[in-house]
Image (cartoon, rainbow, N blue to C red; front, side, top):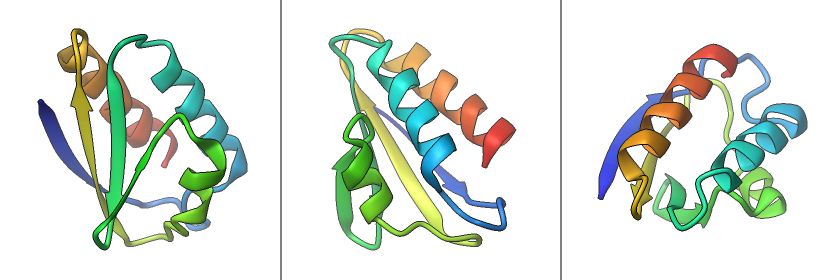
Length: 86
């Protein structure tokens, strides 16, 4: 299991376009489950509506967990995506 934390810097937070792109990225790692957690609530990143339902705002710190055969690559890709987009 690979974990990392990220603090949102985008003024809008996690909104529709980056959430959709993040879900798409996570789906590309078949067999590896990527979860996001905020304030004790954890959801699968591939579930777009649940991801949006977390209500992640600017300044919030979220924790990502990747578990599966490609967890190292998946965690690195998600972390890079977050830095570039959010």
